[in-house]
Image 1 (cartoon, rainbow, N blue to C red):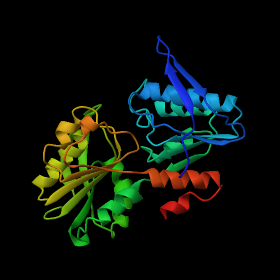
Image 2 (image 1 turned 90 degrees about the vertical axis):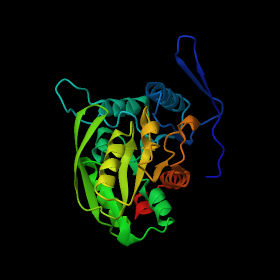
Image 3 (image 1 turned 180 degrees about the horizontal axis):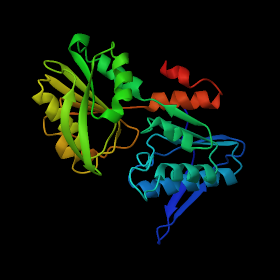
Length: 292
């Protein structure tokens, strides 16, 4: 964007409490706070809330929380009795802290936008990954887009449409617990093709790797994995670098530690996409036209 970062002092007290002080005036300014609520999730979330409050009390004109990765997004509904819908709770916290708007990348489910009582700009990072895949010169006749589960079909279908309307396959999985996935069977044909698996998050990589193993069993020539948010909780790195995947393509919506790098990993930047979106929000221009 050609701007300098705003100056701020963030400290931790001995008991772990967070202290924030803005080191320059934001009175009458349009403030954008960029903070993915990734690991350590609760620390980063609390830091964001205190930053929003500090800007509000410093008489900022508008405060936009730019959240490239929205933690707790997967807790968006009750799957069993007596569970919390934490995504709604976090949305309430951000709103009550004083944010005027939220800008988030590839939310786990689109309906999460409705949890906020303030405007939400939903940024899709697909164009960044699509541009990279286009540079790889994979023949459209050899390509098949794969959804790693039934819930991701709409995402994979939209992705396939942008990739010369490539055919679609679906991995049918049955989940027996949190972070535990078991692949059952494949819907669609991948024999002799280059399979591109599309998901929003890679966490422990169980879903992606078991899906890749199934695709190889079904005769796929190569398997690529694409995702927006590289959470990479252990043992993700061991699984992803096992040789089943030709390449793992992710974005930098949250920081990937150097210790988590492996030869097949490609990290794409969403900086230009976010920068353009922030300019458009500031200028009251259309955001959706970026993704047309």
